[in-house]
Length: 428
Image (cartoon, rainbow, N blue to C red):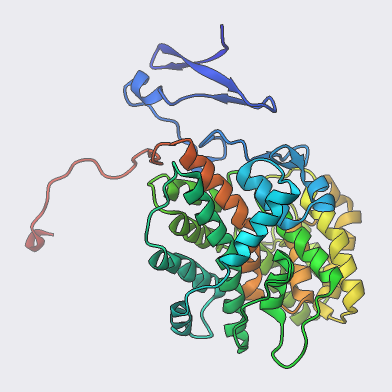
């Protein structure tokens, strides 16, 4: 007999199935709760204790600092794989063969041109527009150029839609950056790998030959892998719930981009650099801000330290910390903001106050440092995050649609006024 969980409500006892995941996680299946109890619901603001779905994409254990894509550790993928291969793994469930990976890349290259009319949409935005707003709008605009809905019962249709999005999204992101910097738009080079081509479209200059720095490429590749998926976070849940209405892939991803924009989610790496800038403008004494962070009566909080999910060291931060050091050493940048970052990192890793509270530098801290070193404008940081998260969003959307999950429709606990009569305006 399967295990159950018992709940008592108004003197009556109810039993609900107890489910176990492949990593021995337990969940109480309450889908029959409201019907069985004649209207009782659970209340879990922020869904911190609520599973919205069963998923085979990503496993995350915040207490132990574990992150795995389709069963593969993030450490092994970051050291042995590349972003395109990891993307294939997330989306299709298995690592590709050499033939499958080459076809995947070739198919992406074949779809990498975007309709010239998209330039007109881009031209409609002022340079002051936030890149995340621009990228979200451009991604949504892809629907107009691909109006037919994806037939989820057709593996060919699904594959074509996935390839188109992976091909065109880096172009849209690169064009957004180049417009902000006043540079001519770049179409990339079909002779380059996926990440190298992305790098070229963003950073090539029209008056000199493009040469990619291998140290920078390695760091970018790792960053994209580390950001590729992170279980049911805010933007991923947004993609799934929008897609549950049978909205198309492009529309669902556009919604996910908007969710990622927030400073409590994808905007965290931007907040790190803004904090470092504030410290520099205040004289650069980071020890003063360490003291402020320790003062429970001071509202100041160090950005980029600790994590909502990880109660130990962020496993992604351990990996990218090395890449950040390599980039800074290779580029030889003399930047007071990055020097402040190094100082904060040193204190946080050695100070007992931070160690005892597990307030270690997280992936947002190091990604912000790398993007700053590469000369990427701070407003583009979250777009870089979106480039990495794209395959995870696609994988989660694909899983949700293929499992024919019902439309998302959360309940609420109403706390407003009870029924009252309408007063004519002259009597109010």
